[in-house]
Length: 218
Image (tube, rainbow, N blue to C red):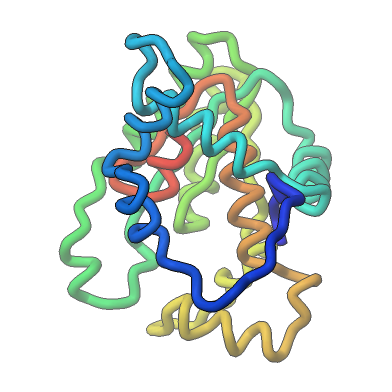
C-alpha cells in the first residue's frame, strides 16, 4: 500500500453492491464535478480542474512508506530547493514497432535546453527530471552546467522495469519478477509514485502532456 486510508469507516456487506455508475445514476449524478461544486456551494469562479486537484490531494495522501522513499531519494540526491520539475516521454522504450512508428517526439535537446534556461531565469537551484529512458538523464547536465544548476532524479536501478529484456513489456515482466524477488526490495509502484510526487514538489513543472505521467503532474 502507498497511501493513507482517507476514512476509517466500514460497513457490513450484504450481497453484491451495485456498481459505481449504477449508484451515481440512482442518485441523479451525471457530472461528478458539477455535483460536488453544487453540494459544497463553491463560487462560480472555481474551475473543474481545481476541484479535481483538491479531490486528488485529499484521496492520494502518501503513507509513511512512500514518504520515507521520497525522503531517502531526496537526501541521497542532495536535492536543493527551489527546483524545476522536468518530465519527458521519448517513446524509446516502446517494444512494439507500431507504437514506435506512431510516436514523434519533439527535439529533446531543445526541451532540455529550455528547461535549464527557464530554471535559471526563475532563480531555481536545481532540476529534477524523470523520463521513460535513462539516456535523457545523462543529456541534461550539459545544459544545466551552463547556469550552475544541479540535476537530480530517482535512480533508474530502483525501478524493476529497468531490468526488462528486449522485446518484453512491463505487464509481462513484473509478475514473473515479483515471483522471484520480494516486493519490499524493489517496488515499481513505490518508485513510480515517489517519482511523480517528487515532481509535484517542484516550484514549476515542464511536462509532456501526451504522457499520462505528465498530465498527472500538471
